[in-house]
Amino acid sequence: MILYCYIIQNMSSLIKLNEECLNNCIHDTSKLIEKKSKLVRTGKVRDVYETEDSKFILIASDRISAFDRHLTTIPYKGIVLHKVSKWWFNKTKHLVPNHVIDDGDDRIMKVKKCTVFPIEFVMRSYLTGSTDTSIWKNYEKGCRYYCGHNLPDNMIKNQKLPNILLTPTTKDEHDELISEKVIIEDKIMTLKQWETCKTYAYSLFQYGQELALKNGLILVDTKYEFGMDEDGKIILVDELHTPDSSRYWFNNSYDERMLEGEEPESIDKEIIRKWIKKTYKNPYDLSMDINIPNDLRLNLSQKYLQLYNLITNEHIQQN
Image (cartoon, rainbow, N blue to C red; front, side, top):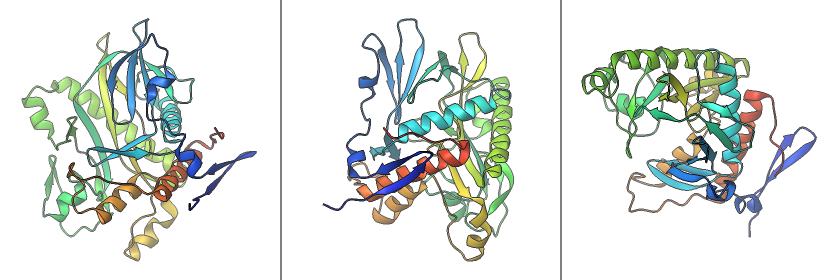
């Protein structure tokens, strides 16, 4: 058996990523929760439970999904997502109120009950992407009016956009592009709710880009989810600036790679999307199995751990 191994420097210890790690991934989160808690919703990555005191608990698994399907598990992924979100929630709470009540565990976050708006607030600052709803895939097909925004001609893939764009999508089984006009006209959100979330989204993204750049990273794009708590207050929910919800590139190599016509050096789950697109003709065909090789799973785990360190200057300890 081939043994793939990645060694991550981790303060006074080393994290060794090998095939043994693959067997310790968390897929079923029910093993981590008290029996008295009730499963409310199973998500692609996070599961929601309700406690006896009517609080909600989010548990981050190691599951990974793309192209509207579950793929496999990635070692340490849930821990990284939890800790990255925790760090960003703490850093941005002066800008936008969030749902966090207690975030003390490696994977478990106690949060406020709220009604989530069925819209994902996708922020973009570069012409990139690999999925059907991405701005690049639409631009490549000739689209110059995208989610209510006019796009200039003669742009190239991965080029910086003239302005930061909010390009919302629906939160369905298959995400669909939607415009501000339709959201208001179809009464998915009120104008006041939309304007509040829109202001929050721009504020979070601009602040996130500033902090990421200080750590040598470009926050390329991301998505936010908002909801209303039991007092009717709009708050930020789910996750924040994780390598699942966001695209990160290394800043120091971006210009050179663009000049050479190469893809930017990424540090997020885009490597799996690209591998799938290259390997499978139609990844959206759910009748076809997609098998992720172990070396790719370990490579992605390494990138997630590296991102956590670069963003927070902290380290995750060996399990």
